Image (cartoon, rainbow, N blue to C red; front, side, top):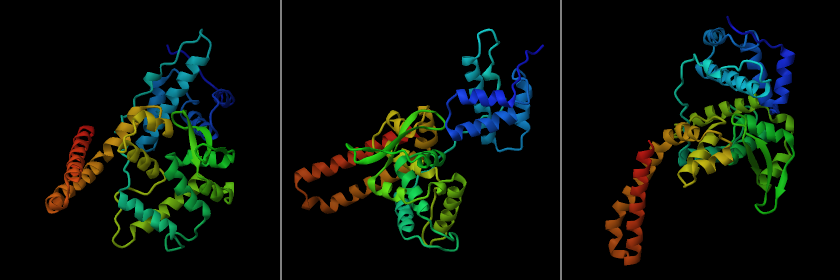
Length: 325
């Protein structure tokens, strides 16, 4: 016979308040747990799993529901009295395992085109109105490698401090998924732009609508082809990928992005983009090797040695990138 444990909505809200969550995280957990856990006996894992499986949702949303229920079980296990029978969060797993989401970074050409178009952007077929918040949010995401929901959360606060050492404004806040504390930054120039924007303009759904419109505009430019989708998350991908191939460790990157699991950075960001970086490195190596015979007569020994070293370094980088794939 199954043990029984149920919870009212009022009790759920009380527990969530004890968890000290951000406003966005609180709302998300409340919605999911209210719909997919509260109607059931918490020990009836089969019924909970079946309900999630039958939901008319994309697989990634089902995975989010599973993760939220598991996390809540673990939270209750740690905070309820010792007399009650612990919940087995491992039994909420009867969902098809998803392949890691592959995030694609922009190429240098794509990024240059994107920011050139952004600077010169005027109303067009796809974007009816250009607001200060539109250009600002892209620059903010590009320099902070955060999720758009995290950006909106901190930008609404208007509680920035000035860092005299680094000559910029910052705010400490928790990353939404991992819960790790990280810094968000504004240069003095961006801070001046930020002060001119009504905080009510920072709405996730509205800003995502702008990204869709801007993407349509970019995809219809003559002679320009974007392989990476222009989403709010693309700038986080770009930041992480560039950091990796500039020698930063996954630990250093996680301290900026707020990732709790280092393998997430490797599986979702590094591996999908290693082929792009490999191609770039090989093209540079070939160019140097092709130029060397033509210029060798004009080079003194020191320059020739430097050139050879550059080629060798690039070949080593290619080997490392092949190993990362």
